[in-house]
Length: 263
Figure (spheres, rainbow, N blue to C red):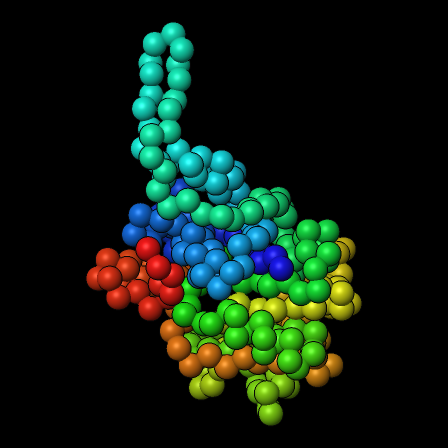
C-alpha cells in the first residue's frame, strides 16, 4: 500500500522560519519534517511513498537523491580518480520513494488525482500532509478503514480552531466545514485512507483547482462514505514559526510524542 504525502504547498505562513526551503524540508532536529512523517509510517510497516511535489520540488528531489551521501561517512579522493568511498552508513531506510511532479500551482485534490497511476494497483492508498506529525497508530487506522468498508477515512483530532471542522455522528462524517471561525470538536488531521478503486469518483483528474478538503471530502461526507477515526493522542501541524519552534524543542528534549520508532 502506498502513502501519498502532499509536499507541494508554498508554506506562506511559515516564511519566518525559512524562505528558501519548501515546508516539508524544514528541519526538526537534523532531519526534515517529511522524514519524520515517513518514519512514522515505516514504523508500522508502510514504506512505499509517493511525494506530491510542487513548490521548489527540486530541493526535495535533491534531498532524496543525495540521501546516502548525507547520512554516511565518506572518504573523498581529490586526485585524478576523483573517487568517493562510503565508509559507514547510518540510518539506512528500506523505503521506496516516488518523487512526482504535480504542478506548482495545483491544489491538494488535483495533486492526489494526478497520482492515480501510482496507487490504483492496490486496494487502498493513504494520504497525509507534509507538515504535520502525530503518534496515531497507522496499523489500527488501516484496520479500522477495512472494517467499515466505506470509501474514505480521515483521522479526526482535537486542534487549534483554525482548521476545517468535521461533524461526526455515529462514526460517520456527516458534514465537512472548511476552516470555521471557531472549532470546539474534531478536525481533519490528515492520515487518511482511501479505497483505490472507488475514490476517483470524487477525485476527477481535470481540475487543477480541486481542493481535497472541499469538493472530494464534502462529497464523500454527503454520500455517507467518509468515516472518522478519532485520535485522542498527539497531533501537531507546523504552520507557523511558533509551531516550528515547539516541534524542535520537543525533539531536542528527547520527548517527541510522534517518535514511535526505535533508533
